[in-house]
Amino acid sequence: MLISSKKSLQEAAAGYFLILPVILVIIFLVIYPMITSIYISFTNKRLGVPFPKITGFTNYVQVLKSAVFERSLRNSIFWTLASGILQFILGMTLALILNQSFKGRFFFRGLFIVPWVTPGVVVAITYRWLLNGMVGIVNQIMVAIHIIPEPVGWFSDPRLVMPVLIYINVWRGIPFMMITLLAGLQTIPVELIEAAKADGAGVIRRFFFVTMPYMRHVIFIGLLIFTLWNFNNFDMIYLTTRGGPGTFSFTLPIMIYSAAFEEIEYGKAASISSFMFIFLMIIAMIYLQMMSREGDE
Amino acid sequence: MTCCRSFIKIAKVLFFILLLSFFTMLIAFPIYWIFASSLKPADELFVLPVTLLPGRISVQNFINLFNKTDVPFYFFNSVYVSVWVTVITIAISTLGAYSLTRYHYAGRELIAKLILFAYIFPGILILFPLHQIIVKLRLNDNFFGLILADLTFTVPFCLWMLRAFFAQLPVSLEESARIDGCTKIGAFFRVLLPIATPGIVASCVFAFILSWNEYMFALVFITKDSSKTLPLRIAGLLGHQYIDWGILLASSVIATFPIIIAFMFFQKYLIQGISAGAIKG
Image 1 (cartoon, rainbow over the protein chains, first blue to last red):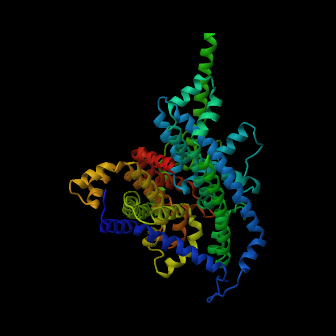
Image 2: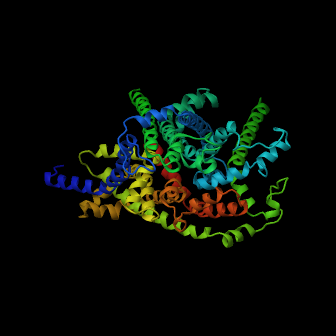
């Protein structure tokens, strides 16, 4: 087909025009603020400093030395890995269940999505109520069946708070993972499964040698999205414990928020943001590496 | 032996039912608990041992909610913000997705990668810089500032999803429309949009739900009480020294209710949306 050069120029212009609003949003609301943040991280901008000066890497050094940062980083990594793995395992299990055709399947599919569409604040309230030290039903039941001798302070015990928060986060994230994996499961050609069955492969074998390999791409995308989503998550922890007790449930996002809006130390907040950004780039690069390796196979 | 085979079959079914019940409990019980607890009268709420079903159904908590607090007012704030975010997001995203799938120009794939970058970009990193910009523009405590902030995550998300949707639709229909004398933009409105309706509905639902549940930007951008969104206001109730659980539970029900309703009607679209994004990646 012969396209006159004028027409293709027109078409290109129209194309650019249509995508322009999106690009403007990204440049002004994402890229520009981020660059601002990087600049601020090299200054001493904080409450009481009307004219911030460049201070070089001071903020970065101070952050690296702080114990709260070490705790936040450790919590962030623990949180991201544990949440991701559990969300995957449970999401996969539910996807496999929903992949079977049985009566009421669509009802359950709808039911299992509810945790994801519920507002974060409601989830926080729900679990604070369920795990309430005095009148929470979970404590009640556990004491009644003698798992624990007396009610536990789920949110006040520094050793329990992160695992509990992770559980809540997993509960919230399962639906999205489940739907993503279910979509992948439903692309597997029936003949492949039938062939494996005919070859005498049992359920477990079929799963690991037929299902999983076929869904590699979808699983990969799912894990990537969730790793990022979990790592960047602020809402769930802040709404449930504000990072408490003390700073025991601090993760990197919480620490950034606390530095910027509670301590009003913008330089500090910006430097933690830079660290987090570097960390994310590392994660992204690892994934890209793995993805290009997948493509070569 | 046949009886052995049917035994295994029954065992499988039993196992399946067990698994299903277990997960249903795990997922549904917390939700049920909030609803049930909100309907308990105050004297039953704090009494031990805890009752699974409310002994007496009481709407006192809801009455208190409406009388003692102004929470219902914030309901409308949230609606206002979410509707605007949805409208703007859909307008920008459909055009953008159309551009990315039906037009050819230099740097198209680069722009797609830029959008992916924005999609995975953490909101927390731009929280305080964006806040400073908004304050400078005097847009804090103004819904418009919050709407802009919400766009930073709804637009990349919906754009990515719509792009996957549009890519799946055959070009032939638009081409035949153009042969019949339609302009490219005309083909967009008259041919593509009608067929792409499921994808667009999915995007609307997503944009609405995401902005309704949004907390972080609202927390920072809105400090004036009267401009707060619902999740923000309710979270404020949670932070107090003395927590009125009755009201808190009732307000949770109110906050979740529209989402559940919207969700019941649009479940199909939601799932289609997530699935499309999962496959195309």
